[in-house]
Image (cartoon, rainbow, N blue to C red; front, side, top):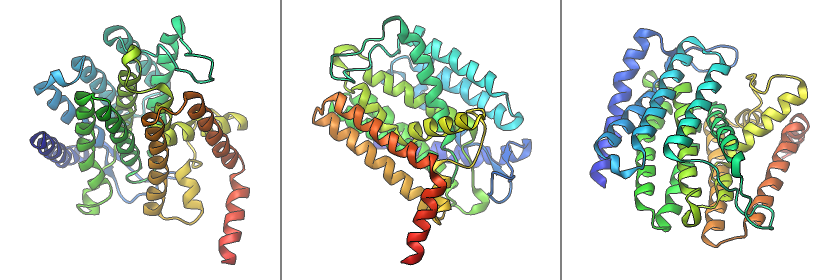
Length: 350
């Protein structure tokens, strides 16, 4: 086990150092602009290194994950298209079309789809029947874009994905799903070198970003693993409602931002500076403080999900608590200027 972790960590780290130089040569870099306030051109290779590392590991140990070949094909395709988007700015409609196509491949070739939502309202399981295919496609596209949207400050995408993967691994290991928990920890180990470089642990000159290639890979991997854990018939080790708590921050942030944009008459995919991390920064927190605050929130939500799963908390209670939490979050976001002014007034007095 530790030999695998060591191999994956240093494979990922080595790939990052090699790829960042190549990325600078071909212009696969993120340059500062009106929305991006980092310094200098930063290589967009985090996702590529993770993809290479996972593909390499699953090539040698394909038995650890069912349909590992299809999984590698899907994440490689997303990574390539994401890298092209990072370089040439691919139209978002084409990206969503590809995401939908890969979700259909996942459904038909791996048999992964949303069959049931569980007992969300207290009157028995909600079986999706023929609508399962469509809702699965929507879920895949939603997860990919949710993790794409939270990639706004150093360490955030990596931190949130580690919270999700490690929380899911904890639950699965407790439920006797050792292989699935193991591959999740391999993914966590593959992400760690990216976080180190992204946060400047090796110096600011060696900094890298995840890029759309990485955020799409992360989002797709999250939904693949959640479906694998929650849609396995009567033996599923994870209830669907628990998945909401494991990805609470990316999911709530995406939904709230899209609702706000639609209310303004804008495209739900129009970039802006109104995400959760922007709100914390308006309140005076720096990037590191914002990262700690958001990852702490995500950990708290995931911990509640783990608690609910371990103690068999009724699904409808977990669901309505999630809806209540999202409603509060949305209300704050819709009134963010009033909220920030009120908080600043209070902090100035103290």
